[in-house]
Length: 233
Image (cartoon, rainbow, N blue to C red; front, side, top):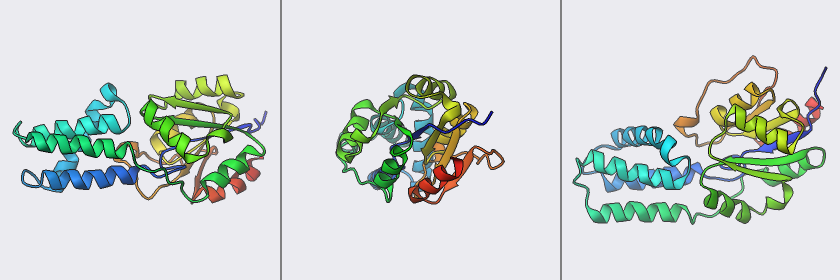
């Protein structure tokens, strides 16, 4: 029996508002701080390795990223990194936690259009306080029927959220910029996964597209969401 789509969930960072560009700006500053010790390419690879190692300990978000920068600085300097450099890394992390919330093109309109015909959820991962801050500043908070800030996005997590707030993943859609977190686990859970590519993409969120899956869609931007919802019916 054909399942009707009743609920649309949106990712937050780099789907509704900019986020990754602030990480990239900080990484450029980090590279400048440590330019006497290693080249930028090597430093970024070491930082990515530290982030991958630390996800299970610190989770996603700016605080874990800042700790990974400090760890990387200690490693590439063989423990000789100066105190003022560590202090500046901490300052850059605090600055990231204060960055403005800039909505991406079509973000508000897409949420408003989806809300006219569907239940609307926000599902985002990362630091609780930072995600709450960005949602409050975005002006979108009142549009959502429910908001879930989770430590990670997995098949069981999606099933539980759509069980509690909707009619199950079989009648749900997840819209986001991460193939690994927003699309693949949602499709595996039985729902629709919609990929909206952002100009900046974190290496740890990349994955192959499930191009042969009928519940996968790729949008140029959120302005195309209305057409997709009408097509699914």
